[in-house]
Length: 500
Image (cartoon, rainbow, N blue to C red):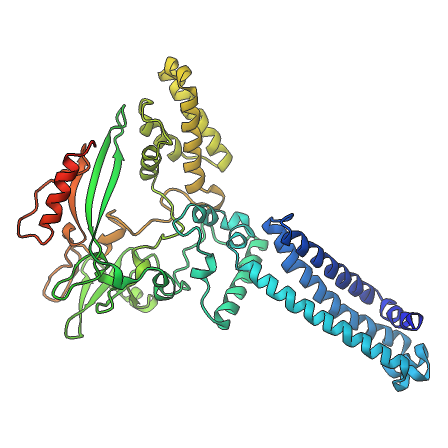
């Protein structure tokens, strides 16, 4: 029986297309099974192996299947016979009339077709599952996504899959994301992608579909105490405290109360920015109690800028990411990054001018990553050997740890290949003049009566200490009529009597 069937296999293998088809489909099928077993067993874990397993092998398999009928067609053309005539020549009358041989061929082709379909379905599901893994997102295009993968792993959302925020729900969103991924891979192959990668403000999913699945705005209430440690640039890197009583309410019955008022269900804020960076506002409008909107227009902008903004930038309803724009891919500011490492004990503050020298080392201009790492090491070693030769010998381990930490700060935040430097991706949290709260809360945005959007600091927080050597030291003791007076008094007494 096999001898008779062998003639059919030989028929589709007589042409180069048929032979290649059989080689591709057979080898891809076997390789896929083998690599899948190796990954299930944990022997192979690299993302690039997964890329080969779930993308290359299925693609080769399908390509091989396409080549096989092409090979059969070329064989028929070469023999100048129809399929019926070719079957009759190969298998006699039984093959041509659907006898035993024809039945064998039909059953074999049917079984192979079912196996092929099953393989493609299994491979397809395995591919989708693999492509939903964060490791695939971050490492499949290592150079392009290197900065994002680095910051993601150190973020508060490191255990949340990329697809939870970047891919919508439903088949349509899934297809769109995969097509977008194919375009990005093609750009990567052609080396035609932008550097740095622009923030995807157009296709980010709404916060209600992402952030609000875990963070429930209705449950933002009360106050949080936030203690910020800052270190001076003096010889001792002197510790200073900023202590804030953060008001995080979404709203109250008779007053606007706290930071999350902006996203409360009963409130609504619309705005149009001058450009896609969302750093300067054309106008902001706020929903009033009667359902109307009060608009605050930017009096500092010229007419041509206003016209272009109105035409190109769509109206946006404010949500979580308008402030928390770097909730996951967080790029640090250099001074805050150094302060954080000192606070965590990763930098020895007893080394003279610890903060100043590390800050100088990580913010220097280096042509590439390797030069940066070497430059940081040379600078810090050289500084202490020149300025404090005796101390450098005594605290060699501390200086080595300082170098390691400074290199980690640089590696996380600066990526020369992708043109990611300090400040490339600013955070909208905080009080820097061109970002954060002051984008809307400034003296340029005015209503028809000339009234400005308030930028009183106490709208969002009370300042309990600022640049003080104590964690809790009022710049001004709160009024007894303040609704938070009792809490402030208790906290003040507690912290003033603390060891710090």
